[in-house]
Length: 330
Image 1 (spheres, rainbow, N blue to C red):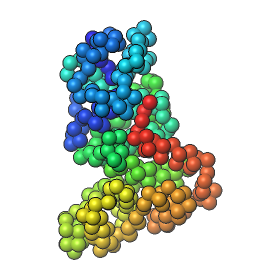
Image 2: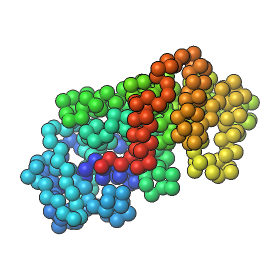
Image 3: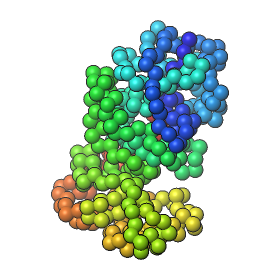
Image 4: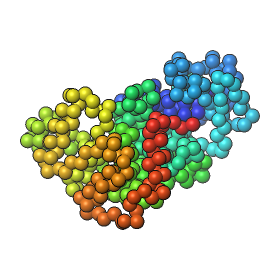
């Protein structure tokens, strides 16, 4: 008997349990069947890390994946979800004791059947970014040293997934994923800037996120470091966009470090635009800033694509709701 965790439970494993300083390595080749569905079997196989605290974001119950409708047997302490059709190689990782988790790649593919397209893009940015949602944290996420995925690795997986459930939406969303975001609000910012008008964005060029910038001797003296990592950076025009979250910058030492970094970049000739949560949440304030960014990039925004368009309101509502839910998949 095997215990195959569903995508929401698997993502809690990747977000809460898996080390923050490395990416997953070689996935399992096969997934054994039949899957455990009886409550006594689940309790026997259930790993030690699946504690009450771990299950809290999942409603306190074990959520499993089955591949045959005849295996579905739910109880007050567990629920099963059916995945019909095939799944590509690289969809699962085997843990100790016959427990399998969905790979981040498979979670993205399966999420395409559950999420709005903009939420799916935001999910992809998390998987390819330097953060993981975690409801236990005050700010709702943890910093990662190494992303769980890269766009290239996700693209390779989706090539194998052609014809699977969710493939078309997942492949379309992949085109808009930006790597190396370090927070949910950085993800919102870059999506708002770069998504096409039809998805609620402003269609600007894709920047580098948290890209290493080597400092000149004068700038390094100001920043007290040899390099820095701007949040959202357009190197070609020396433009840096910084998002300041209240909890991320509440410590006086962090504030001083942020100011030193900004001043160092200005010393090197960078234009630095600083965003706050209140500015981002107010559409008109944010749009004034976007228009300034567009001018610095030599772009002109079409008037008919400004303001509270239906696509823009839907984007803002869906992605902000995704962030507020800490990436809830079910």
